[in-house]
Figure 1 (cartoon, rainbow, N blue to C red):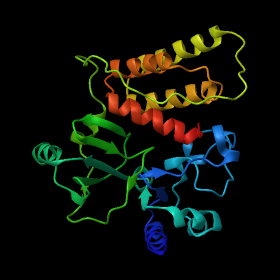
Figure 2 (figure 1 turned 90 degrees about the vertical axis):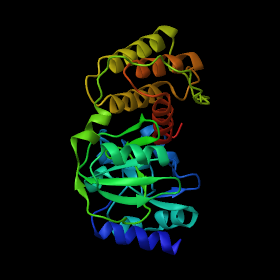
Figure 3 (figure 1 turned 180 degrees about the vertical axis):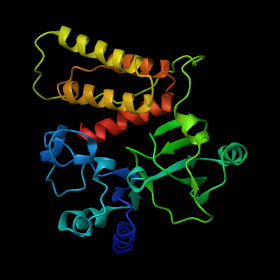
Figure 4 (figure 1 turned 120 degrees about the vertical axis):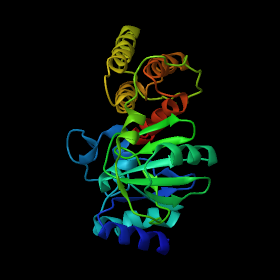
Length: 278
């Protein structure tokens, strides 16, 4: 615990927003008062109202540079169970190109400008100076982590840090033509169990149709649009048992039609569930 806490405090002094991760490289789930974002959400989540919860809630949006928060009693409890320290790259004005394997590293060496490199368990993190939208699975073994995402802190790395290049931005803002056929993805259905406020299936159908339209009409930052749409659907229908595997498949198909990978759909859905605590 002390090592993680010391690392977090050191990073915070340099302007890097940090948060604890539990076993499995996952953020701590929302506390009971923040379940379903009833608290209004963290200010940097662009949701109405401030959240005064002292817990490390809301996944990436919990990241902070405030030493008082990092060293507070609720965060101390989290550090006791934390497996590692994470940070919000976009909040620090950074972008991480996460390369999962040797093939991804070889591709980056050929196509991306040299920059600071941080070794990971299986591959490398390439760090660039500048923030941008995040996206998973932009190509085989490659994720881009910046705004609205978190990355593990694995050290400061080596080499000078280059400015964020257009080659990395282009990985996220890809053309929408010649998309691969959607893949079937097994995504967890919320348990439900809450009181259902929907008096008719028409309400759910209308909501799903609007969600599909929102994804389909996205013209840029598609991955962010997908995440926000998943978040909106789960906040409305994630607690009453209305959603089925067929409903989720429709949302994933709409996202994949815009170029999102099956892996990113699954990750965005999981992140939305964690954020809302469903």
